[in-house]
Image 1: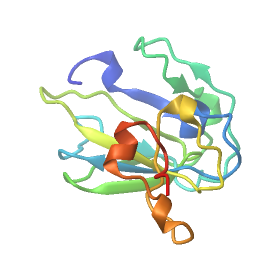
Image 2: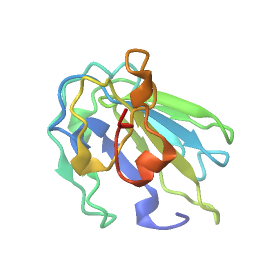
Image 3: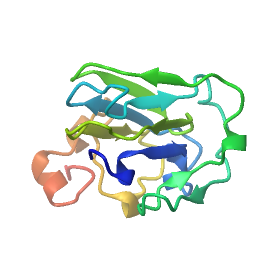
Length: 158
């Protein structure tokens, strides 16, 4: 959101939101619906941090959102890369990549969506929201339909 503290997201690893999942990575596809710029809080990453273990995190207190956050001393010496992108662009990263976004200093909402993908042999983590089986060569009849997803079923019952 523009000009509010919750518009910025502190340095974190997505894995901190589901530490109870197993070791398989969860892949995030972050898609911006508007141009994501330095002014409106584009994504920033620490490249080549995808193989880090889950770092000790804390709940930040600045925004009131209880985002998970890392301390500055945990960020290492890798250069931070800002990722300004055009609307409709997707950025893919795994759940251990160190990333954040800066405050939105414009008068417009920076709309985006996160889609997350994980292996079918990974814990489904229903406590974090209902997912669905998007594609399966081995079990094509179990791919969830929109009706299944609305009914909070992760798979289609054959």
